[in-house]
Image (cartoon, rainbow, N blue to C red; front, side, top):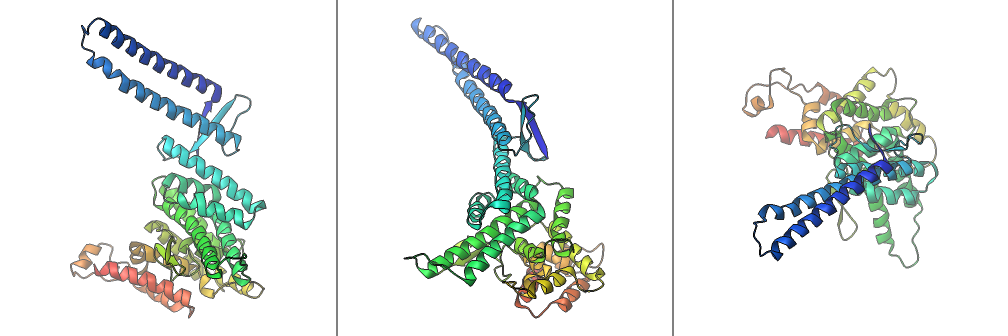
Length: 400
């Protein structure tokens, strides 16, 4: 991460000096025009008239600088950016590969503030406060590469998983014992609660997906984050609900059947967003990591062990498919058919291309992974839906 340092008082003095210069230039222009008019316009002032545009450009630049200085002050005061008390230097955060523009600085600032608030809510806050944050600022900014990359990085894969788990548990608690305020239509209240749940997951899934496709993260950072997500489903020391939370982040939904970018809720059919569209290489990295874990496991894979532990206790656990990480991976691949095609049925010859295949040339397909996934697939509907979704996406793309 990158912090840009500045001295607040010194920068405010610079801004004041620039503003004073702009005022003097504007006044000088007015004096020249007035003197020319008083003397019956002896000179052409065409070049002087252009000074107004230059002064406005300067004022715009002054405002941009001042906005950054104030953002640095806000970030430092809120503890989201570095502050050096001994020198009076404050700073603002900007991702390494992001252009240093006021829009990007503002996006990064909002993401830093939201991540700080999310971490505080995880420790001391309630479900309603978390829901407001996720369905508000986090959801509305999920397509902004700078915001998404900053928020996802600040939270980390495990932090994002904890938020997803909180949203799932909130819905499970309400759904198992619903409360309807007096005078409220029960169906409308249920639709509202379910929409909040789905939108909260969409916010988390969408932010990671946008970050995975953006230029803000380089390939190393994308790979590291993909591996971090994979650990949620494969690491024995990770959280018990890690595999289920992994699926929530990949699908943006608790059921793989909701595999479109929008879903309808309630009698009126109000559309809300669902999961994100992830980068192809990001998804294949995750899938290969989980596959390697399963094939190298001496006994049960980690996700199945944790599912067995969770299902032996109390509370809402969900189906086996909701814990199987390939439910999440294949559902996400259904939204990116290129990833599904490359992972499920790659061309087996190194020199073969999709163009060759489309022209009818011989290009054998390596279907070993497809067969392995089919054989490991359980009878659980979530697993079947995810497999079918990814397979259909790959088949349609190859057919073209």
